[in-house]
Length: 175
Image 1: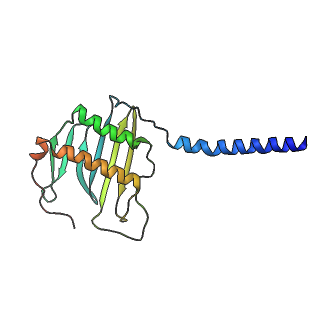
Image 2 (image 1 turned 180 degrees about the horizontal axis):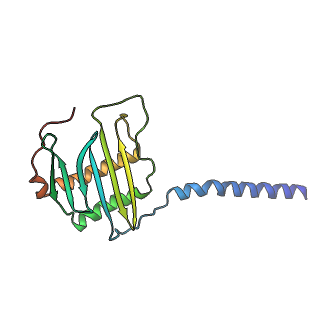
Image 3 (image 1 turned 30 degrees about the vertical axis):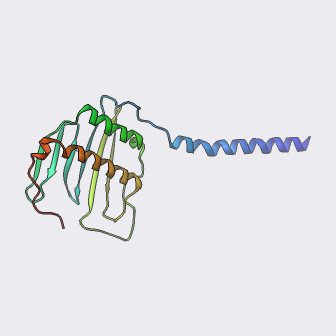
């Protein structure tokens, strides 16, 4: 009888131990974004070098700011189409952007100048998230890399717009 009790207790410990370990793994991959793009979906991304992150794509107010370096900033009224917004939303959904937690720089002994900075505000289904990162320490996290790739994708869409093409070319550069 003692063997059965010990065996029963051992099995129970094994079952509860396995259940406790599997719960956090399952919760780590929860998708909080709705599959379909909600009506309030918008974003703003600012990017550039160091303190001069003058480039901005802003769907809250349908404006794009282009850093013209020595000539200030150019502004264009650009509204992304519903289809373009859906494609961007789908990419954000696939990367589960609203659950990103590891956005930032990786601490290292390296420092570079100039360095890229990027900040995001994203609104989905009544919730707004904000991120800020830079590559000043030469490396970025995998989440920041995904945001960088996403921003480059969005920038390509914006660059193809006539209103963006009409903006003046940048003069100069950053050292």
